[in-house]
Amino acid sequence: MRRNAMTFAVGLAGLLIWGFLVASAGQALRDEPVDYDVEDMDVPDPSELGLPEVETIVEPQVESRTVRPIAPEVFASPAIANAENLERIAPREPLGEKRVPARPQVVLLPRPVSLQAGIVAFGDDQRVRLADLEATALERTCSAAADGEWPCGMVARTQQRQLLRNRSLACETSDEHWVGEIVTRCWVGTMDVSTWLARHGWAEARAGSGLAGLTEQARADGIGLFGSSVR
Image 1 (cartoon, rainbow, N blue to C red):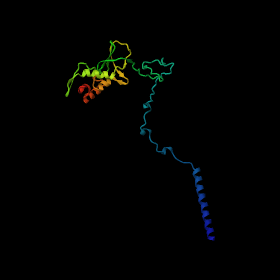
Image 2: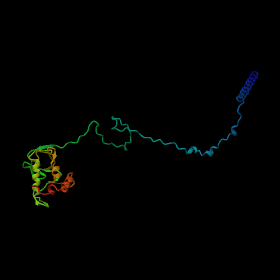
Image 3: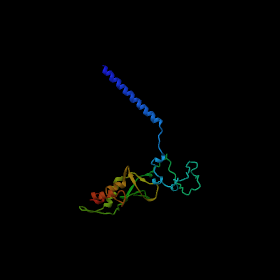
Image 4: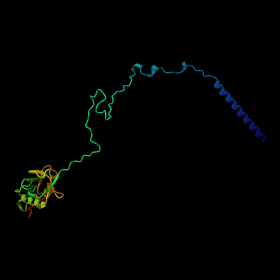
């Protein structure tokens, strides 16, 4: 027990001595000024750094541009003197309006008379040549392997008559009282007459028209003008 007390006393005395020495050293460092000479410092020579000469430094150029006001009340009169680089463009369409393509006028024409496959008459002085078709001449004859020559032009007109059956035709025209012949498109109900004739091979489509594919298909299928006679 006595030995432990002595050991503790010695340790405590050692700690006190160590604290006193640390405090004394800190006080000495604070009171003693740092002694150094600027000439002894290693400062590089500016000529060795490759810095540009003062005269060679170029100031950045800021472009000066005159702004043209675009307020509605002054837009028509430029507020700058030099307006030679300005260009006026066409105004845009109003956002609130939407243009709808004008639909062609369609009139209902009664009592059609089939003159040829592809030509229809109304009375004595009005004729319609159906659009996109080459009218089939009445005197045209066609040949078939089994039947030989047959009057396909007359048969084609008969087929058109059976389609129309004296029903009124709805045709695209701006005037229902024209005189002479016009080229236009006509319908029986919702059926386009030109399309029907080309699909069944009773009239050939004009070259380059939208119905040319129907004529080629009729030729490949051997129907209408490209087939055997119709009894």
